[in-house]
Image 1 (cartoon, rainbow, N blue to C red):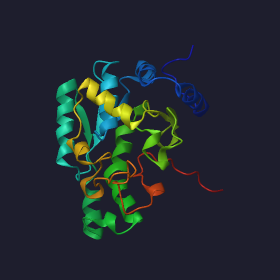
Image 2: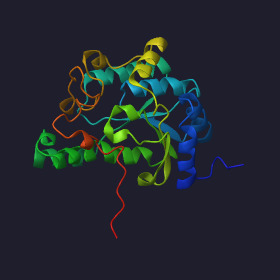
Image 3: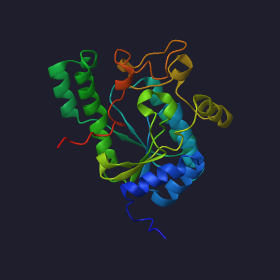
Length: 248
């Protein structure tokens, strides 16, 4: 029998990823929370996928852990749904903010809207406002949960249900709704009367920081409204991008 406190190797996690690819979201979350709760948490931006995962987690444990990264540039509608979720499920939301000194220096040197100037500047902003706080959030955890789906974008097509996160100390990263379609997400929200971000009803399928998110047009990709001035294969903020191994 595997010791539930033992750290899984990269190969063991890859094997789980293959096994769990055919399992339901609830089955994946039961295994995950039985093994890791309370040392695992959902990283939530409070989009449609994340509120679904919160609802599913609440069916498995009474007090699922949820954290969010408050970049300082979020929509008011995102704060609204955070409060609705907190009240509906009676759970605290663990909020992580960027380092104020780093933000001040960045804005002082590059301007408030530096992300429009170049991909490098946009990634700098995401790094300070999102990636660094994520590292702090994950520092005391044995794993994290996401609402990623393969259907969302070309950058997520090969994501597994369970992954080995070498970039954060070899913890597990669990993506329970990875095979869900957009219709399945919304069917679950409607049938369970889950609070959701009001911007979804205004043409925003994917919601991030206010200056970097717009509504999409009919027929556009789900994430077309995120960093719309960039190529689709570059549209990640860094939270879900695996570091490339150094060249020898």
